Length: 226
Image (cartoon, rainbow, N blue to C red; front, side, top):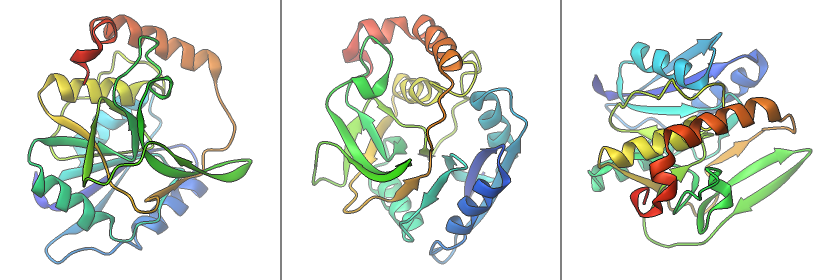
């Protein structure tokens, strides 16, 4: 792996959204000595399978896994990521919003307290802001999968089917490996999630059921996931 490369990995099924996503990535300020790599994955049967394939293709030590409908607004994102990973060497994964403890339901946003912020579009633009904090990072148990940046590679759990719960399972796997999972301080949101209103409930329930089976111990013992 090349520590001078930041790999942006995305599972793609909509070229128009991905084009917008890439245009924002290409507008980022790239610090001297670093370069950006784009890794596109198409035709994935699940997010975990797609991200494992993307990981195998990527050359960068530092990786950003993001949805095709996420548009990065913070042009200093790369410097901010590197600052956090360099200052806090025990941080393995960071997201933009997340929760301190994953509830028994397995649904991270049902837990408390939540931290972070993001701009979102679902029929209208809205600001999602959770509990404020002023430190550079806030440790959490799980993050939303719209944006996940890593400094070390862990395999994505391909027993999680479909395109849901991959984010919570991956965060719990990092914590089990003794890496910290954090939300960075954002004065203003770092990204816009143009997520729309489509929601495949049967697919979500299938992923959630399998997640609950695989991570039952962490859900029954919340102190183990944060």
